[in-house]
Image (tube, rainbow, N blue to C red; front, side, top):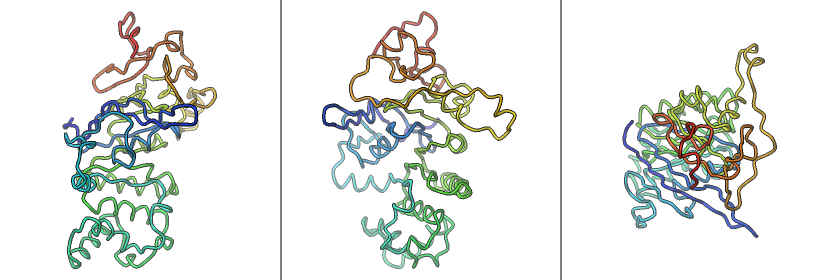
Length: 328
């Protein structure tokens, strides 16, 4: 494993509601290593996108620290923040709404360079053509508007825009969920090719566990603002330790009908209850099929069970482990 490019320590994002507090991201500690793709999965509303936006400073943290290449992002001056924007970019979920419908493709791709005052006009023309070549779009598309492109073509333009300033880190916020299935594989393969060619680091947010398995080197599982499990991809899929991870993986369809019929599926009761205050025990205990008294009363510790495999669950604690009776 290389050195961490991004270090997240006890990161929190709370929103004040009328009579309570919504914990969108709650005490997340995580490292993202240079050159890797970290997959982030979980149900809608669990805080995945909020976490991604905080890394790019599109959302301000309530508490905690984010370091990019050892620089504390909260302590940067305005010029330093602008320079940091060139190193961190985002690919948005919906290519239909993330591109300005009143701008041509040429104007959309020129905008990042104009904001940062990069390149003369002749150099800019070459740079734009180079970007289009990277994402597989012909330069004749430059005069078109977003509505004249297909969904896959628009997302390629979104990727080109994210690559314009040659970033090191990209948050991919469900970049294929709004696309046809036939196009999804093309975009995921393009992202993998670009990562290898440009030495990019990705945080890949998605619901589709099949895509996450294909593109990610490690996977983090998020539930109601907290990380509940983190492991190398193969390890997580073969040996899930958290009941929530087990339930997510059991929902992934298997191509073989015989295997699909024989497979055990875990059906969780009810919908997740968003935490608006302090919870004594495990946040998943209300839906967990294995919950015991300790789960309802004591918050499980985040600990490393095997090399690189972290989990917050009392079931994974060794018998008579003192960790099993410690709270946060």
